[in-house]
Length: 191
Image (cartoon, rainbow, N blue to C red):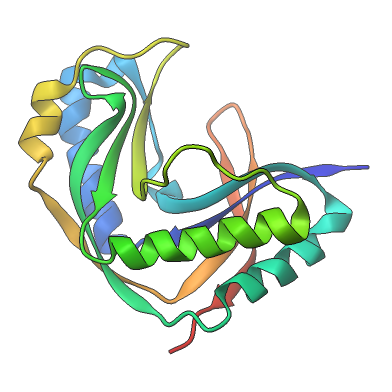
């Protein structure tokens, strides 16, 4: 059986992507070779990574996703702040966070995660959900060089406002030049 690598996400606005790309350019001047930079078109807020699933399960997953967001109203959110996992001193992932709208986004993610677990058998995430947009990943297996000063300078930055109106069920094809994302479906939230 063929499998498809999948995840669920929220798309961010083009304006947010431009702001984050501008920040990436600043960071690249200092640490360009130490990180793999996320392509501007691939920036999003992941709700749940599902991994490789059999193609014949895709319709069922999409139906469960529709059920998970049923009754959820669209809401505004602010993309603000910056950080790194596990820490700015030993970064594996550089990210932009969510300010206002974070609580609604966390509730949406919890609804999606619990439905994917209950209806589709996906494991529940053990770590607390931290909504963010990944902008870079450290090269290699270890942490990248300290980015504490760069993160501190961007900690109070605002990257823009958006509206969560849809949840996207996304396919991810890994390629040598980076992943290629293709929407498998979009589920509208209540207006």
